[in-house]
Length: 464
Image (cartoon, rainbow, N blue to C red; front, side, top):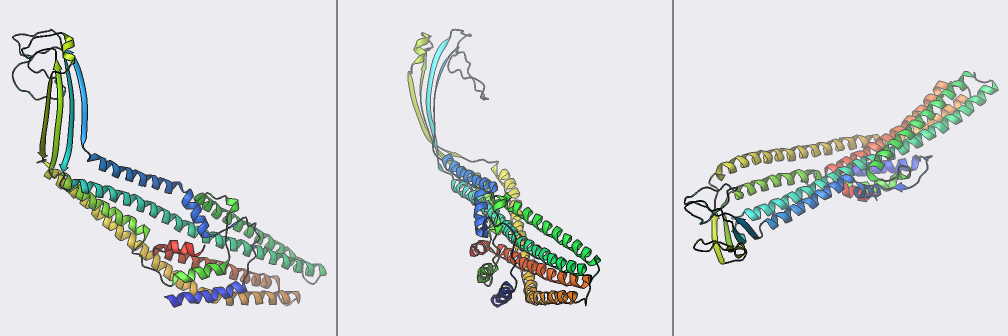
């Protein structure tokens, strides 16, 4: 493959020497592709959004870490009310107030005060792998966000690279159209001079003027298409439309491209593929979290509390102020082990759902791999055809130029008519446009091949 890429270079060098287009445009600044990419990466709101997502994922990981620090809750409650109760148990539903002791022959509506302060702490001393699974899952989410940004940035570079060489081709086309206008202006002068001398009919000059007007329209259309491409580049980079000009120096581009095109890697390592692989790893990490979330939880618990009441130990009611202080103090410490017996069913259902996500992610990886392989193979086919076309371009240009010179001399001598002369000019015009198109196809195929094989960044840097 390496030898194949050297052949087009020879032909392109010969074209550079043979065909120099002189663009009649205002060059505000010749941007390299690398320059525009740097502008786009810094400017893109999409990439800034992706960076914010990365920051959010990092914050989520820190949040997961903080979930496993010991809890410590402190509170104090001062109350006033009655104290009437009966023996017997009940299930508290959260809204049923507590009335301890207070067992009297009948209701006592005398108010009493109470004060209750508590400090409670809990620490999970063993999660049986759940904590590590959560942290690994959070890191996997960060990796997905990072690869998503890299993927979006890679797509942006790919799109901008193709636009850059399209702009380059359009600038060449504007130069070609300008040359065509100049040729028709010269032909019109010749034809009008001959018509004024009486050697040719005046109809020739009218037809030549019509052809000249058509070439000016073609030139205007080429300028319009160039401006549209510039606008698209400006949209992606934030650079002013009026300041965008692609570097049309052929030799430097070709040498740089040839240095890297002969020894490309395969499509296995590619930001477009890495994103889907990382998503697959995230779903696998989710499965680990689901499995370990239903394991037992071993916790260390501790509580200290103090209590005061205006009712003393023998149920005598004292002043309300007596209940505002603390009279009794307690502490409790223990180890708790909890296991959700119904969790096996829930675990099975969630794992079944997550398994389908893993399968879908595997197919996404497969589809993306096939897409990149297809782009790479199509680029190879285009490069094969472009290499053959580039062989013929110098022959076509020389022959078309010689033919136009001969036809111009023959028209002056009265040997041929205007149709033959304009046909010869069209052949040269077609040869020039073929040159611009084939060269553009060659560059765009190289861009696609580089993008598909994961070497787009190297390709862009080589053109700096």
